[in-house]
Length: 163
Ligand SMILES: [Zn+2]
Ligand SMILES: [Zn+2]
Image (cartoon, rainbow, N blue to C red; front, top):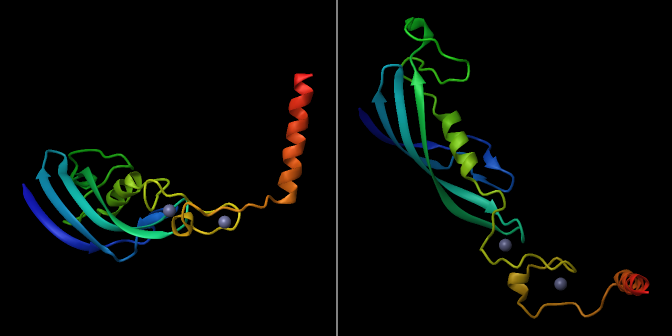
């Protein structure tokens, strides 16, 4: 068994929607290599910085992510000992290509709807200002005329149903 820690630059497109690891950011890896019969079992932890855009107010914020992963790298088929499927990771020489495994682990762990904070009030639907900055008293007294008309229509419908 071998342990190793290293820091590698993040690959491009390590992101989903509004959240991701910036390209070339430091990804800290802690890896453990175990020799098993079929190949090498790699168990690891990766820590990386995250930049996300709040899905409610679009404010960017930074945080970090930590993911665990495990992958069995098979010895090459040429060794004649084992057959491997196309999907499986294969050892090429001494090099393990960890990028796809890291990518899978990170992408799965990313939040689908990141928020700058749990109770982010989002944007004002009227003027688009960030409500967190505008304060709780921010509101617009005047209703848009079209919405006011719609309100009347709905009242009317209610009366019909009652009758
Ligand atoms: Zn927000
Ligand atoms: Zn507003």
